[in-house]
Structure formats: structure tokens, C-alpha cells
Picture 1 (cartoon, rainbow, N blue to C red):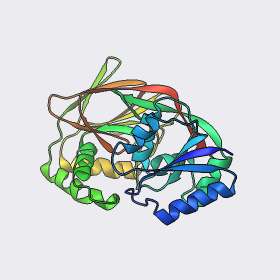
Picture 2 (picture 1 turned 90 degrees about the horizontal axis):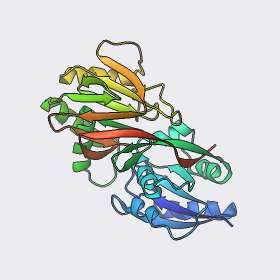
Picture 3 (picture 1 turned 45 degrees about the vertical axis):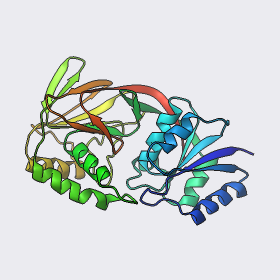
Picture 4 (picture 1 turned 30 degrees about the horizontal axis):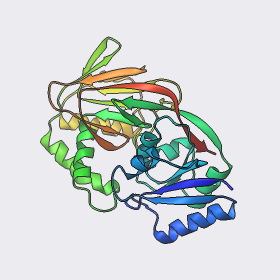
Length: 288
């Protein structure tokens, strides 16, 4: 009888209640499997637990959002223990990219009967990410949203931080170095997948296992340009624009003369400078 570790984040936007956790365990048992349950209570819990696994699990099942998945990916750190996903977060970007159903029962069926797929990981310093990294406006918003976080986290948590960041209107220049090719911009997204979260798709051509990042650089300064760039990303527009530079690379370094915030998979990740590179086939996920 296969044994899985269920990692559940009760503070994600659709976190599992105790009754729901019991139902999930029952679903696994009815299908001939068992689960050990790990309830996280704070940032870093999922990463520490999966970094120190003492049992040989058939897989790690994440019932949470992209942040919890990112913690598990960093905890496993290249060990190819399969990761199953029950989408219970705000954006559930990775689950959408992989076609994993939103309904819990259907997601469990995928975990128990699906196939495995190798994905690339992005590496930023010592940290792994699966979706995207960025620096500039959205990372400032992310840092403010997490600083004021209370209880469950959802899209509404970002509204006031977006307004405050736009009102402040400070977007320092970022230098983007890709193997000697240097560009200057005010906001940059380093994408490993096509979706960003919600309706935003700044890099609609990004593929999670092609060995390269899609890098999107937004050149112009000013709060209204940031609003325009968000609108274009929401429209999934990849049409040529003279102030939006798109390219692909497996390695990129970001620097700035001023403090510039950055984020990884939707969580704050400190400040520039930072170098990012692709690590091929670094994680294994269970997909339909």
C-alpha cells in the first residue's frame, strides 16, 4: 500500500479544514493508499519538513498554493520524489499550467493514477523556483502584501499594496545581463511558465521544460506605464512594443544601483543583485 506525505497549508486562500483533511485521507485509503499528514503553521515549515524526510514516500502531496509548492521544491532540493498537487491557493499557477483539476477529488485521482513529468527549476542564489522571478513594481507590491498579511491570503490582499506602490512611484533602473548582452529597464519578469497568476500572462510562450527562461523587460519609468504594462500582460499581448523587450536565455543577472525588491513564485525574496539560471529536469510532478 503506497504511502504519501500530505502537506497542507491552512492559511492558503482555500486551505483545507480538519474535516476536509479527513475526507482527503479517506479518499486515499479507499483507493488503496495511505497518507501521513503535515500541517504547516508558518513560513518555512513545509521546506524544513521535506528536507528532513525519514521515510521513503511514494510522493509528497501539496494541498496549498504555489508558495507551499515552492517550499516543498526547495526542501526536496533536486531529489526526484514525485510531487502531487491539490490546488488550494490563491493563483494555483502551476496546477493550471499542468492541467490539474481544481476539484479535490479529481486532483486526488490524478495523483493516484496520473503520470510523472520532469520540470526545469529556476535557481536564484540558493533558492529554487518553478514559475517565475521578477524585480521591480510587482515585487514591491508582493513585499508590502506579505508584510501586512493577516490570516488567509487572497487576491484582495494585493489591492492596497498595489495602490500604495503606484502612489509612491519609485521604480529604479535595473540592469539585465544575459551572457554579455546588457539591457536597462524598470521592471523585469523571468518566466519559467506562461502564466503569472490571475489574468496576467506576460510570457505566453514560456515552457516549463525547454531549458530556457522567457525574459520580459519593461523599459519606461512612471506609475502609468506600470499600469499599462499590467494591462498588456492581462491581454496576453506579445505584439512588438518599442519599450518591451522579450528574449530567451538560460542565465541572467540583475543588478541595480538602488535597492530593488524581487520575488520568487509570488513570495518576497529580498533585493538585487541576483543571478538566475535554469536547472534542467530538476523536479518531478504528477500530472494527468
